[in-house]
Amino acid sequence: MRKKVCSYAVKKCLVIVSLVITVLLLLSSTSTDVSATENGGCAYPNGAEDFMAGAVPPPGTYFINYFTYYAADDFKDSKGDSLFPDFNLNVTGNTLRFVHITDKKVFGGFWGVHALLPILHVDIETPAGEDNKTGICDLIVNPFILSWHFKNWHLATGIDIYIPIGNYDKDDLANTSRNYWTFEPAFGVTYLSDTGFDISAKFMYDFNTENPDTDYKSGQEFHFDYTVGKHFKDIAIGIGGFYYKQVTDDEVNGEKFGDGVKGQAFSIGPVLKYDYKKMSFTLKYYKELEVENRPEGGTFWFKFVYNF
Image (cartoon, one colour):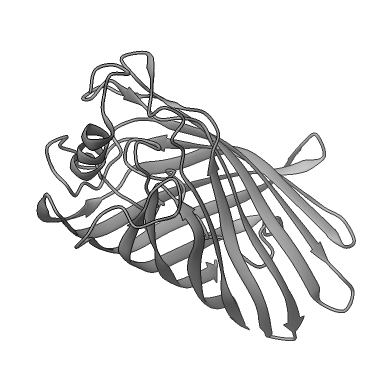
């Protein structure tokens, strides 16, 4: 797998052996590809955000818990056809997120910080064998979140930094770390009408560093979460999901790898949210469609928010 001379069969083998966390956190996220980013998909847990994705809460301290279960029994190639027989992937994740928004303003926006610690269980079966692993994932921090609030519009921006602290072994099928850093500029926007109609999206672009254990550098990735729905007092109902597209080619030892093979996916499903006093609860299920060079499955989410 040193240079461009890698055959398609070798690429298949690489994907099976290096399938670290197909969906990070899922979380994150992690969602994987055939030589379309080394460990499949992006570091971010695609589909994590939904209603009010661009509306960072007012100054204060918040705790958010994301629980997710992802299941896939198919792995798609560049044409959207099944690539591997006897493929099964199950990922159960729980992510702890702490957010603090200050009353300080920078460029007219409130300054805030957050940190996320995912815990993951990965269970995978492939033609090459079976493996499972449980452990912490890579730490996610953002020391500079800015948010603005207008009558019907809410905006937020920042750069999430993925720090590889989880367990990783290049010879294992299942891992809980990607073993490289990711820098992810993000921009969130929400339009909330006077009647409670909500259109929200969070746009992200990932820059990945090289994995020092494999000399593999994953390509850059564009992705966004979206939700369209309606708020009825304490309840909100809508449709949401994510779109993911790898933009640039992977590299091995500084040379292009994969012959233009890039991952992509789109998902859609129902979203239900309930607000109660200082808490909120969100349930959603997203089914993946239009998948290329990655597993195709579905994700169940449960999100809990508490305002201190």
